[in-house]
Image (cartoon, rainbow, N blue to C red):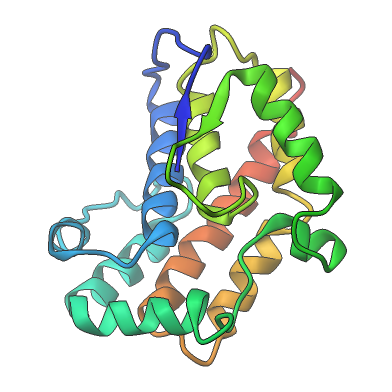
Length: 204
């Protein structure tokens, strides 16, 4: 959904940072569109270590959910959750969760920060930048470009644009009537938000 502009640098390859970027990247993919056959096959091959930042249970749940899903069923589930007729069961945008309105002030502030990072919305993408998938993708980019975006700015981005609402979104997703496979995605998202709130509380 987003693409790096000026924020180009050496990728951070420490195990912890790579894990964080990978989880954000996966959440972005699963929340941007329903998984295709290739993604489902990869999810069925998940091998998480027991101490994978406390998320081993979530990885196991996601693996089982993938093994019991089909592309056709996931297309229907994703549509019911996020698209629907008029709108889906959930509205996956930060402005909506923080103010009750779409395209509100939180989106304006987000766009200002993204511009400073040199991150822009890709051509052809219709969703605003505060879509949950776009924000997860942004965090993956930020983590991988610490040469240009230092840890303090990473902390501020998470605190301002994700922490106020994203865990609540994953709770709503977990409890959504249309959710089956996406309950597992929600579990991973909740545990990632809990981990990030602890990790990013570390003084810069």
